[in-house]
Image (cartoon, rainbow, N blue to C red):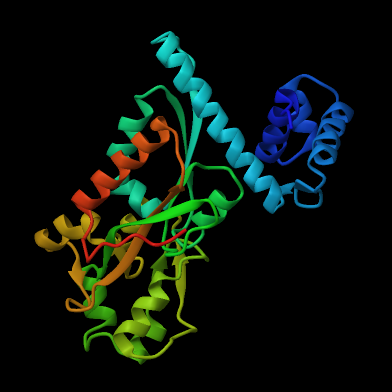
Length: 302
């Protein structure tokens, strides 16, 4: 079966924009032409590639997007070998959780961006980045999921450790007797967003049972969350890599010194990858395993 490059490009743009009209503007064609290319592509494969209601790829569409991304990397690699410094940059999408980006992942992302790529970092909660990979929007992702989707492999990269902290005045006013259920229900907690499950996991780890019904503030960036805690807005979980200097200076107090929350992370990437993609994976693995807490490492099957 021969692949039609225009149809493949159209499919990728439709998924990226989530809309036929926006895709048509980017491709400089009519909306009808976009629709017809998608229909023709589906007829060629004999299956649905796009869920029209949500404009997201089906399982078959996800596999096709994976092929499209690999093809772009292959073309870029070939061009670089034939004509170095030609200036052509292929888009590389990586899904990463905000805490990793704010701590250890930033430097390696900058190193990747200096290569012959156009890097797009797609930020989401570490429990939700895998869906970005499954939709074909990224060549790899940082995730808490141990099992890899079909066609991918999950490499354990280490654990991100979190400390529960607050300012000394906040602790004195709200947790004079330590972390107990009554004070936990009364004191406001600072979370990343509504999808943030770390605080609930931490409370269950410390108290021994699930806790609900406590007040929460949402500050959806690692920097804003830490600022809110430092300003006495509430208490919350912050990566140890980010907060240790403030603990040492006495600006923040650890509420449960012997109850760090460790979140195991995995790098999901293509099982069979081109040299450029393998180089990206190797750079991420090296940096993660240098910085993160390292339990016994083992590869999870795809």
